[in-house]
Image (cartoon, rainbow, N blue to C red; front, side, top):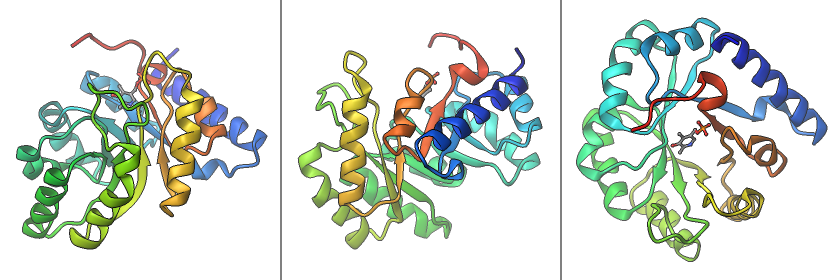
Amino acid sequence: MSIQDNLNEIKQQIKDIADNCNRNPEDVNLIAVSKRQEINNIKQALSTGHLKFGENQIQEAGLKWLELKKDYNNVTLHMIGHLQSNKVKEAVALFDVIETLDSEKLAKALAKEQIKQDKELEYFIQVNTGEEDQKYGIKVKELDDFLSFCQNEQKLNITGLMSIPPESDLSSYHFALLSKLAKRCKLDRISMGMSGDFEQAILFGSTNIRLGTSIFGKRDKV
Ligand SMILES: *Cc1c(COP(=O)(O)O)cnc(C)c1O
């Protein structure tokens, strides 16, 4: 199947799943994860009118999207990988949404850079729902303080939470937790669900599913 066919099929699936759980399909945004995909594959997705994409690596994203965004200037580009605070200049210039806000140092650097570039992005806080040492993200018990720091002190536009569940766990536990946290924090957006578990994620209230493989097929290993 072509990338165009995959996208159409997935969008129909999203609609069916949302209908089944009484959600508005328009509240579920499909982020096409184009990391490690060739430009031609991305162009095929763009040719269907799809406009929301995700990348996880700043340098690679720049190489592809600085050019592509000239032709497709209404694309919304989401950063879904860890961002180092010494890369905020490139990140603020290129991305529209950063889903992986995960430290005070990064929040401060982004706030400063936004003022410099006179550009306001949208942010999600990455929550380490699995409390994994090797994974980035704010710990659940530190979330309230971190949110308040970002909103009140750094004046960042925080609209949601994001999580990548541990591979060894059942995703649904993490989806339920992230959903509950977002409600408590009064944030509308919840980024969770990948190719293997997006149906569950939608049932648990996801507003941003991040799909790579199911749209583009298998990608090269890093
Ligand atoms: C790569 C990636 C995805 C997409 O994963 P697939 O399994 O290919 O759908 C989603 N979210 C994040 C954070 C990723 O790095």
